[in-house]
Picture (tube, rainbow, N blue to C red):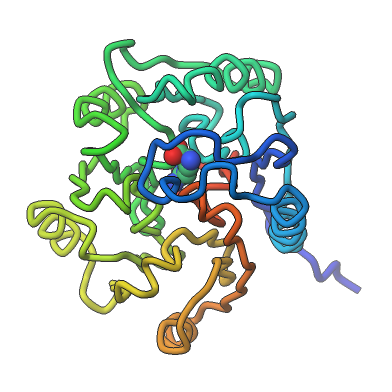
Length: 285
Ligand code: ARG
């Protein structure tokens, strides 16, 4: 009898980087979410929530771990380490000195794991996959947020370095200070986003490139629950919390929503997506 499984069909498992919250806390204020939460996090609760996220992600992906470093409390937000594209890693250049100490550890991890490190000019602030998200419908298209953390000048620099199209989006609401807090490209060309976080030109650019039927615009209450800060792995969308209404819309578009409570990390201004970094962003997908 003929072999029924084809060697041509290879199932690729996504790979993500996470960093244990051993030293996580809010010890300074560099975004509005942190303002009322200095020394207000509980390490056991943060650990439990992070473990639940890692377990959930692990059901759909391989998780690599970066060692945490004492004195760098925001390291669990691996999305900000830099931008991965194929085998290339573009390290972040953090705007605030509080996070600049992470850069050497990130470079080191990626160099040791076989990535080619390619640098932006050192005059440009750029906060990695927190502000730079590949489109899931059009290959080699990168959406880049600027206005709070990353500089607009990072857009042409990334286009040159990676030979990709970069669509810059100016962010206008300080509560949504990284692009991944208000914008999430999903499988099959869908886009989950909060229109209120963008300036009018950015909104027009989004509307020009994403057809109305593919745009899932969320209301402010879902945006404030960090529903757009989602990890999308195939059909699965992992997020902190969603209203019943948004859940129904995502399910209507063919997604399966999994909630993982991450309120300890929201005190620092991040949730599911910020706590992960895709290591397998490929040129064609
Ligand atoms: N406290 C961190 C900061 O302000 C949170 C980072 C969240 N990361 C993200 N990709 N949105 O930098």
